[in-house]
Image 1 (tube, one colour):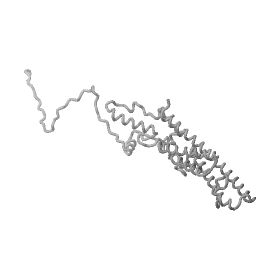
Image 2 (cartoon, helix red, strand yellow):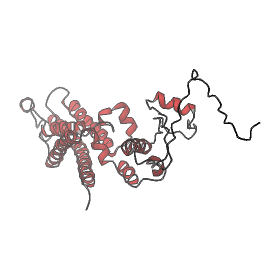
Image 3 (cartoon, one colour):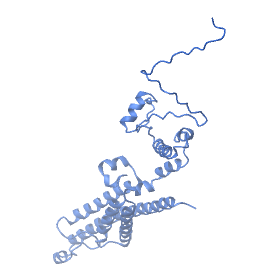
Image 4 (cartoon, one colour):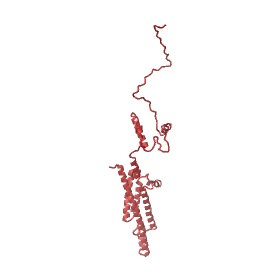
Length: 289
């Protein structure tokens, strides 16, 4: 059975795939609409020159027949510009969905970069879909725009649900990196014997062990500095103690204690300097002269 993380990864990538398909369909339908509009305008101009269309017929129609071009000054120009802008936006969203180039989006279009979620992407998709659906188009363009609008609503919902972590959750490279970090290596874990030395101070040692474990797992040293292969460590001398003090760590001197089996020292009576010195006592002997 897969965990919830795997289901989220698969679900987000399914929505991502459908979003890419909808963008491709809208791209193709926009090109198709441009070709159809140009052909309709050419047919209308040819009919007007041949005399089949009168000035009254030209004034009564609001749109050129079989096209999305409005019958007004510059209508053809703005209709083509509208489709070109839609194509440009679709290309930008397509590149954002495949994640290339991510550095370009992070710098120039941050809302479509890796630091933002799917909410902005869904809003752009919804705007493009609504712009296409607001016109009288053919069935292929209608279905493509409606599909893109639905995917935009789904991306907005996912952006509100997962916020900025949505793109990292669906990223294949992030998935592989997390999979590699499931089993820790010997370089990531500190020696167990060095962390749990004493059983009497288990609470203090456990907090120290967990702190050192988290820091080493993130690739930093015990003093909070980033690991660098070209820079030597501080060691256990005065420099190490000074660096630890700057980082907020306190190194206390351990208390001097004796083992349990050692005998306690007997108390020796103190002698004051003012006490009189002891006088020698001599015992006479019977054989003394």
